[in-house]
Image (cartoon, rainbow, N blue to C red; front, side, top):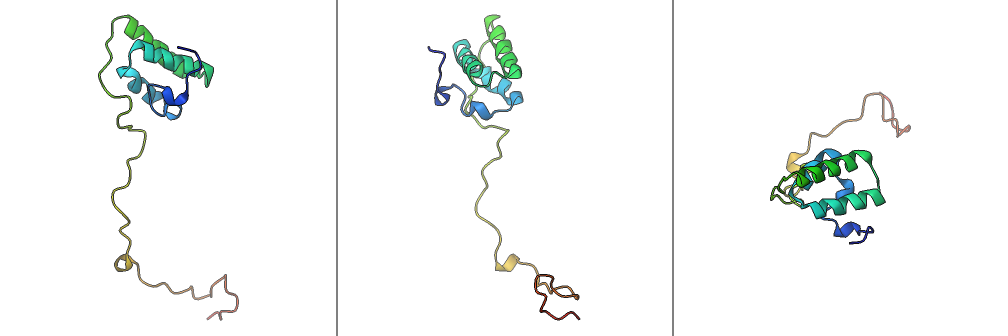
Length: 115
């Protein structure tokens, strides 16, 4: 493989936007060659020391006999909010009572008499 890896070819989707804390969990399912791809990409693009350290630690674990976890690096991301369920619950039935302007008048309408 070349050192110039395309972002959309990385083994972890949306890699560039993952917090460092989540990266360690996301790469547990990767093989050593996939972690190596991420490391080369990181060196060529962000070269962030904490990220390099996480990737190097995982490479050492794999070299020492650790097995990939079998999870999915593209699985549900706890760092991303879930999509909203259904539509808005706002309707005419859920609106509040009408509001009257303050007794001193409306500041945006100086012609309104103050009482």
